[in-house]
Image 1 (cartoon, rainbow, N blue to C red):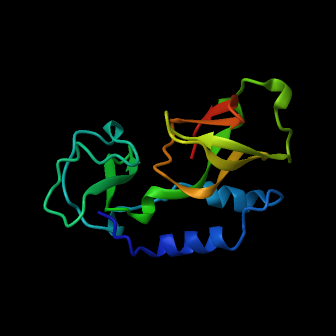
Image 2: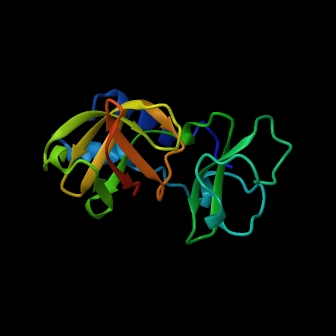
Length: 178
């Protein structure tokens, strides 16, 4: 279990509040979209599981851990080390400003509206089925596309899809890389 007081959340919040989402600075865009990275020394061992690949960020059910003041949520998985990192309640590790999609993992339903390298476009976007649309800006960088939301998003998970819309029309989608 990772404590909510971990310094990495303070640093991240400073980054996103200092208006470091300038579309001309890909380093800042990338930093706003990075997944949080944890190691075993940051928290305490609270249980065992049958495989980190069975869990997704934001998951609450099926953890098999009780006796905590607030419910536990998955905040990160490390499949290589077979570790599931959890946090209690509305943990800051659940929230991020944006996500990244690699060039090969993007699909334009409307290729005529595709944004070119260095360009940005405001859209309405979602990261899960039936989620209400959220205001976001899609930036086309050299390593891929960065989708930055106006508001922090809960449970951004690599391997899942993000989709963006103009009005009610789907414009594109892609597999979340980080």
